[in-house]
Image 1 (cartoon, rainbow, N blue to C red):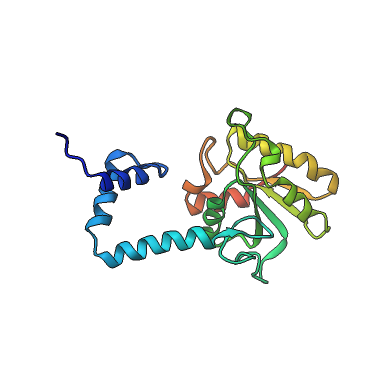
Image 2: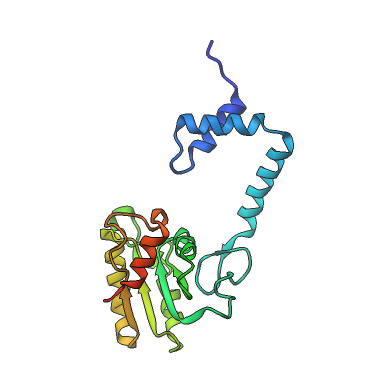
Length: 199
């Protein structure tokens, strides 16, 4: 008879569903959680449930926030005349690590990808265009990943923004083609921001 602990197997299976987690890592995490002191498991599960219930989208930029308006949008020192458009909430964290960018963000929550069933109407493009309609934005930085889908998304959005007379720039290619922004180091992102080009 095989060694089978149903609860352990279920916990391992849940960890395995996380991105980048294989069978062995999932098993290690499961063993760690069940052998850790009970207060750790309680805090871990409480933090998980709390984050899941409290975190929502910022009403302005669509980034993740635990309040109606995220910390960036509520910071009066930020330049609201520059909007950096990213595809994923993790990209906001990557740019914030540079401590160089002082504008605000807009998160699309994906890129246009017909093969994956992601059409423009599934992204937060309408919300971006609504933010641009007040005439206060001077520049939109298209900071989607330098992939085929990221480039296509940037070009698609640029067609709507150009008639508004807003300057549109694209990150310079300090970021490797085919790479993901969340894995780029601070120096690479800083150089990409400094060398951005108009579309």
